[in-house]
Amino acid sequence: MVRPRMRLDLSYRTQYVYVPAVRGGLTALRLCPSDGPRLEVISAASVADPGRVILSYTDAWGTKVDVVETATIHRAATFSLTAEVETRPDEPDPGIRPYEQYAYRRDSARVRLAAVEAIGWDDGGMSDWEGIDAALRWLPQRLEYRIGETDAGTAIEEVIERGVGVCQDFAHVFLAWLRHAGWCARYVSGYMFSSKAAEGSIEAEAMHAWVEVYQRDAGWVGLDATTGTPVDGRYVAVGRGRDYDDVRPVRGVFLGRTSQAQSSRLSIARSSEQ
Image (cartoon, rainbow, N blue to C red; front, side):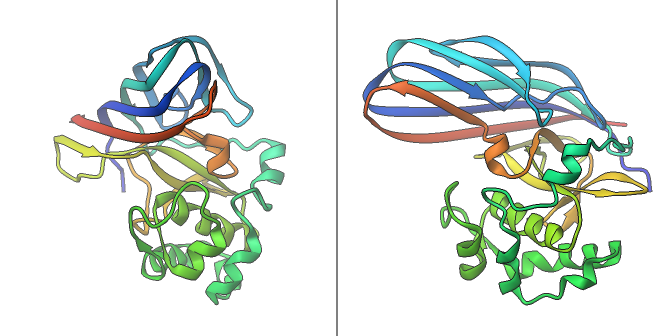
């Protein structure tokens, strides 16, 4: 089955409010998609208010990073992305580097393989693709998607014990499951056009997360543990790594003791299908 290409317009904005105000700041943004297999970036720009992008580079995991410098005292910082992309879900992504074969099979800070033993599923059944597909479809029945019940610091063991989480938790649990069964699998962050309409737009509050598994004959295959379905042309990858820590969308430092509140807004418009 040929999966259609999609032309998508993205707008993402995340804001941090500080009480009291902070001085200066240096922030690494992983918000911007870049050209690669299955994705053409027609245009993209990251903007900060206050501050400016002083440097852009690609990190060791292949993710584009925009570094923002802020020199002023400020009570709020807003980081925005606008982009137009075309997804190409049927293009192959066969490449795997030697260090990926090592890093994506083992424990990482947020993906501890032994944690999934509490699930009680015999991962010997995941030795082939049929077993992976069965686990993918079953996981949304084992975990409940519930916003606000977990945060970026919630341990994978707690997610499994309580049976609730958000997309990054589903991805971490599925990664641990896959790696425990011997597969090479990586965490992916990005944007998802959740509607199945031919055209139109959606609004959301956050980026999305899913996984990619390396299959010898097919290369990297995207799977969304939150929905229990394969990834298609509605998904726009931004960052890849061992877990959420490697692709954290906003990471920075500033001067001052403060408390902070964060809010985000995502808009995606689908302009065409080919």
